[in-house]
Length: 236
Image 1 (cartoon, rainbow, N blue to C red):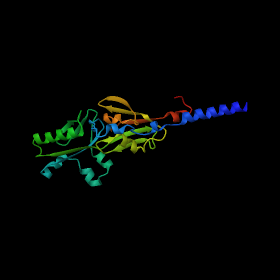
Image 2 (image 1 turned 30 degrees about the vertical axis):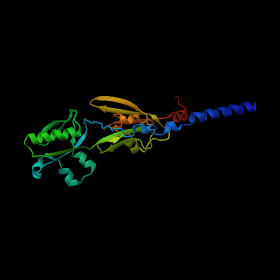
Image 3 (image 1 turned 120 degrees about the vertical axis):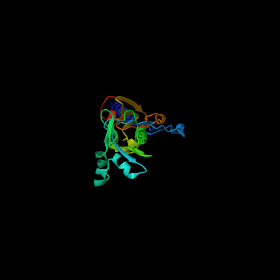
Image 4 (image 1 turned 135 degrees about the vertical axis):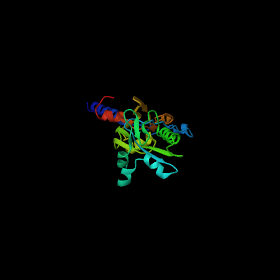
């Protein structure tokens, strides 16, 4: 009787051990990365969206002539913090337009920051406003939301034109040991359409996809792995 109880106990412990263990294959990132050595890096084309806040600077050979085409008063008077830059920026309307000095309402629909730079430069030059103008456009409120099994979930702002998915996860302090590395969900909204994809971080294949880089307003969800689900008493 005691032996039967002991064997049953050992069996239960052994099954629990199997359920609770996570193999290296489930934990290690980019296990086949060598297959992509020297591969081409894809750059994403992030078109401007409603509620984007843009910082647009215009310069030309004649400095005084370019002053009317810049919104600098607030920043010059009170500093150069990101919050003040955003307050003094150009807010993209629901119609995907901005109200630009002198030129009036300008459409940014289906344009990237680089496209808008070229477009404004052409308007200023061809319209006889400025001689050889230079236009720079910078998105001030890019953000990504990261939820689930990461060390510091939340919404993170970045000012770079592009950050990778791995960089975004780094902002959240990386996945916890309980994060499911084989099934990272990325939710993306662009031009009125929502798409979702599933990323397997243990493989390097996704590095050749358009999801290598984050787009502004992406949402990344890291679900718990089987060990965490089992320990929580939930069905897989």
